[in-house]
Image (tube, rainbow, N blue to C red; front, side, top):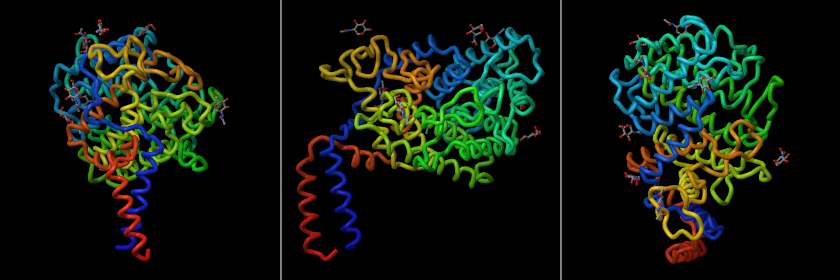
Length: 446
Ligand SMILES: *[C@@H]1O[C@H](CO)[C@@H](O)[C@H](O)[C@H]1NC(C)=O
Ligand SMILES: *[C@@H]1O[C@H](CO)[C@@H](O)[C@H](O)[C@H]1NC(C)=O
Ligand SMILES: *[C@@H]1O[C@H](CO)[C@@H](O)[C@H](O)[C@H]1NC(C)=O
Ligand SMILES: *[C@@H]1O[C@H](CO)[C@@H](O)[C@H](O)[C@H]1NC(C)=O
Ligand SMILES: *[C@@H]1O[C@H](CO)[C@@H](O)[C@H](O)[C@H]1NC(C)=O
Ligand SMILES: *[C@@H]1O[C@H](CO)[C@@H](O)[C@H](O)[C@H]1NC(C)=O
Ligand SMILES: *[C@@H]1O[C@H](CO)[C@@H](O)[C@H](O)[C@H]1NC(C)=O
Ligand SMILES: *[C@@H]1O[C@H](CO)[C@@H](O)[C@H](O)[C@H]1NC(C)=O
């Protein structure tokens, strides 16, 4: 009883302190984007996405946005029904164009081990298109010009036959040498896992888990609270820093593997793997949110306050927090995700309501006049600030879809979120409650 009292006293003081510190007030119910605003984000993404990973991330974002039941993050149905709703057509069109280009550029015929995107310096990024290829194959989309299933087989064979590896078996992120990037976790393991699910091959799901585990072993920096380094080994690129987007790629990739395992026929057989993945996502969340800025955003390198503020990684990490709440019933970082979402969707100073113009993003602090998220890291130069980032547009959609699905599920954990995120001046009830607790504590020997 006394311990409980002491704990609630500590908690009240913590709430009061965070209120006084001006943690942004969250209006979860009112902060939203209209369909017209989402359509603008979708359109900018369509115009901007050209690189292998941008196309793969776009496929995933459009799937989560428009056809959530066919995403592995839905929590069941992996693989999904074999008949595809019309809402998946744009996803199939993107991956069909990717596969057609492959033959066009490399001149290799189907049946030869080769990546889904020819001529890429990354050994991993092309595979980000693999889940969409498998989904197209699974739902019978093959036609005279594209064999999606064969393209997925070719990509899989390429990974194991041609991509260099560490001595303990981690596949390289680069073609030319062994080099490991945190980005890999979003590009390859979700493909391995989904391939295992569509071909009923548990060892392929196990391979997805093992790649994640190996990457964590190389990149997790226990000297930095568990933040992941961006790049290790090799000499192609150098970036030992704790790149925020990289931590987001890793957490989001692990959640897709977790969702695939959890929704598949191997969910029970792979219980300990699921437990590890959930724990590893939590490690990244704990490490990242320890560095979140007072405005709700991350710096481009989470633990470097001199690096610029980055809305891109902020959106991706927030998406993973909502997905974590749904997939693992872990609610710890919901207040931070709600604060991030409120910040990213806030109206510009001087604009009275968020939806002064419901058909535009122009009057919002973190979007440009025509709807690009800002400020963002340059997706082609991870140390520099950029503008018009396609992946950032995709992350806005991932955050929106994750939040929407979380809200539709009854916003589990929202009370914890409200309790901790409520900011602004301390309300009267807080002061009364605090006074009562202090009184009670003074009267009782703790
Ligand atoms: C957000 O806005 C959309 C479009 O107006 C609406 O359909 C949806 O219900 C809203 N979502 C939430 C969670 O309030
Ligand atoms: C799963 O998909 C259904 C159907 O589209 C959707 O209504 C629901 O919100 C999704 N749930 C989750 C947890 O993603
Ligand atoms: C094959 O399917 C893809 C994806 O649905 C589509 O984009 C393409 O136009 C189709 N090609 C033919 C020849 O039907
Ligand atoms: C196809 O290849 C061309 C030429 O390399 C490139 O400009 C285009 O963006 C590629 N399209 C897709 C969908 O990969
Ligand atoms: C492609 O789909 C067929 C079922 O239509 C399935 O038997 C096959 O395993 C799939 N291939 C892959 C690589 O998932
Ligand atoms: C299952 O996956 C493993 C790789 O993990 C592969 O070696 C094996 O050939 C696959 N089995 C079948 C039947 O495709
Ligand atoms: C932190 O970021 C600043 C600005 O980009 C950079 O000059 C500095 O080297 C970084 N510090 C570390 C320790 O990486
Ligand atoms: C709202 O935005 C749309 C699209 O940018 C624009 O056409 C319209 O004029 C704007 N309305 C107002 C009242 O600013």
